[in-house]
Each structure stands twice: as structure tokens, then as C-alpha cells.
Image (cartoon, rainbow, N blue to C red):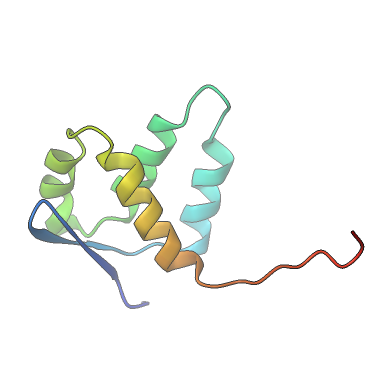
Length: 87
């Protein structure tokens, strides 16, 4: 098991345990007309079970979903430099 990603949202810590399979499932579920449902499902799949109730409360706030998603994915994805050489 990897070290959880911990963010503080609305004054409480929320732990997430993303993995490559769950991340890929989230990417595959995204459609041009549907971003909210896949993102919500992804965060609920990877949140620590003891933090799920708090996450559900926080997700009721405007913009919380995308802000949390961005922070979790930034931490999970890490730093990968990609450079185009033939431009």
C-alpha cells in the first residue's frame, strides 16, 4: 500500500489512496458532456473509508469537486517532464 495523499478540506484532513487502475478508470469514464460524475465517483473510490462522510459534505460546496480532484491528481501524477523535440 502506498502512502495516502492527505489534503485538508473545510478544516479536516481527508485521506486518498489513488492507484493507477482507478485513475485510468476515471480517465476512461470522462466524456465531453460529463465531467462531474466521473470525478465524483473517482474521489469516492479512492477516499479512505473513515473520511468518506466528510468528503461527501465538502463536495456539496461549489467548486470543491474540481479543486480537490486537482490537488489529489497533482500529488498522484508527480512531476513528469515531456518535451517536443521536432517543433
